[in-house]
Image (cartoon, rainbow, N blue to C red):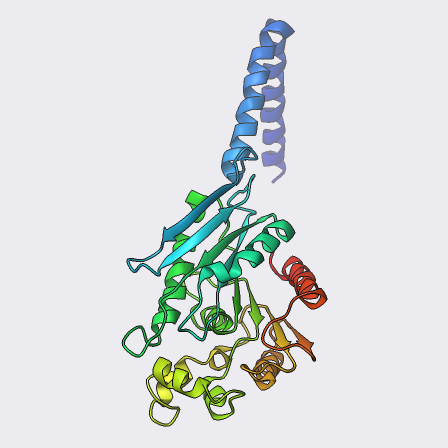
Length: 311
């Protein structure tokens, strides 16, 4: 070992002497172009390695197709100065009892999120709606997965990271939870934002807040929990929660007339049992959605939750 160390020192000293001789044979004026070139190449290397370009402009693409059906479209909002290592994404999933609604329902949310989360790309999606004649479950689950996978496939083109958050309201929150807990390959969601989403479809059917939901569920899931137990089990996000599930923040109104408080409470308990990072925000006097100070509080909570859990 001693001989190897001495040999290395002799080599280093030799290199130093050669470098000094080169310096002596060149004046500083002739060195400046070379030093400048080295500096430029070093900076370019750092930019290429990080794929960072602060000159990338803000871009918006409306009605981008992620599938062949007319409903399989999304609006894409890409922030300025984005890069593949740092720019995260949020996918928005509208509600409407799986049978109505549109991505335009989230227009106000898009504007708010773009202001509050300027380092995030926003993807606001449509999906095929269920009816008695077509598009029964799991069509909606499959569409959300296809949209999620499409975003993943576009990370290099859009210059965003594979750090994707899911946000949904009501039926859209159910689909966000299902994607986040069940469909974890090839990329798992980094976090889920759940605005009063059904989590246990069997309990949702057997203990409804509103009996008008029962025929909707029968159409959507091809029967009842008794006649089609597999579909009710496979469509229930709570059944797929495990210790590796993404961090989840739940928002629930205490007097929601459509989605019982028991749905969010049960999900909260399951996440607690499995040791998943989560937060449960209950607004005792709110119903199925809210505005004003409580909505501001919700977005404050989202901002803090994402800052703490999506890195």
